[in-house]
Image (cartoon, rainbow, N blue to C red; front, side, top):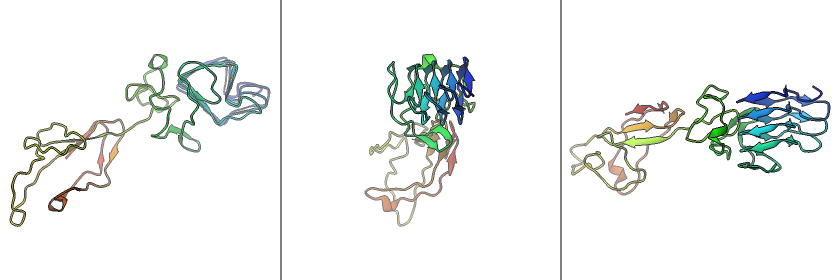
Length: 231
């Protein structure tokens, strides 16, 4: 396209713009567009703004585009957007977005774009994958919301055991009381809860600390679904 390789004078919500080019002057991906929660990457322009020209960006990522000057955005307003150099405006960041892989524009779990947006600017209830647009309380930047898993272990009474707690409790089952380990055993069944939004993969369960050699894990689940429980 001469300008606006993917979109010209349009409004785009929760979109991915990549691999576009403008052989004219500006806007390899977008020209004069309103962009909300969009990821603009891998686009190019002959002169300026391989990403967005003469537009507005909110909750967006505009990174790794190319042009002789202003490779990502030019003459555009930006708020809560990941791009470089800093265009000014509220909530913008210049750190690299940390995509999962080349040509995979989902966010790595360590991305600074996670929970870095403005909920008031989130348009629609779903991201580009069809997942909830807001996970974890604050919208992510870009087209994709990041799914995360979160482990919680419940005692035999169903109450959550405090992470890193060393206090034993009979009601929760963490106090095994007295037992002659030479002649008998005591078995407790604890529940692993996944309070996150992505499947929890359990690769191993180990015991450590004083007396750990007296305990063994009989079985554990390999996967706990999002929002699920497994003994």
